Length: 399
Image (cartoon, rainbow, N blue to C red; front, side, top):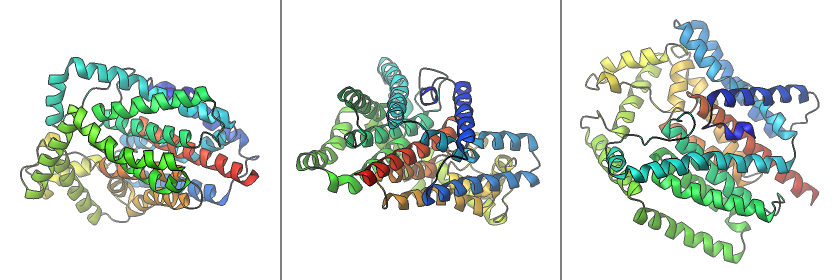
């Protein structure tokens, strides 16, 4: 529970909590029974990390390489973390979800208040593709927060939909409904485009898979919500309108091949081209986990020298970034983790697939395994979704 509360509170507490939970999983390793799906996902996580570890052997910037390897250790320890989750009661898992919702709610509400008292300035920042500050705790990176906030909405909604099967009390349902509702409103004010896109695609996936399980009233409500919520959000959120306006301008710059400097998506497109060029030169092994940043920066001189030095950034696309660091096999293994999880949905329930869809979309516009909060968030969200899926399957088998 401390782990779930620490994403915006303290990086140190976040890491210590994760390490302690992995230690619990280590002690339970021999007694834990795993199904085939869990074993496949475990192997994919471990294989992906091993490719990054191997790329350290030929990196020249060993100091930076060690930092990257330590940063990504949660991926190697995913099996241990999941096993520790698997050992606790369903009620505790639900409380973890509620605390995660609350941990997103606090900075969201504080940051929305800060937005309204600085509305004119912050609206202008959005029009210039600049981030809004996220208040509370240590100041989490805005795109990370947006992805985690979107994930909290999906997790919370799914738990509410399965309240009967997960034995939620009325109090827990009311708390969950309140937190999901507030977080959903806040993301339309604060959320980066990556978070908003992953949120709506996650909702769409949930709706398509779960629609048949709803009663008539809930189906009508779902259809009305799908039509009205985007309209209401656009009507009442000046922040959202500004983001859409900025996005249209951004896409036009990219489409017409204009100067990409200071345009978020257009710059990403140039960064993708740059990464693709590096990968074509080092397809099998990559350039080494510690050297990727410097190689990508230097390669801009040949791919697009018109990009200002300050804008010569990494691709913000995890598949490309992993492929640059450790070779195309590493990028494919990362994709397989998410694609297999989506496939698994059709044999279980929609949660693991919805979370995987959100993380897949997020990874197309952000390097989600290159920052502490998001790499631990990736691990925790996948484990939570898999844990809840396993609990629901056990419940269905007993029934």
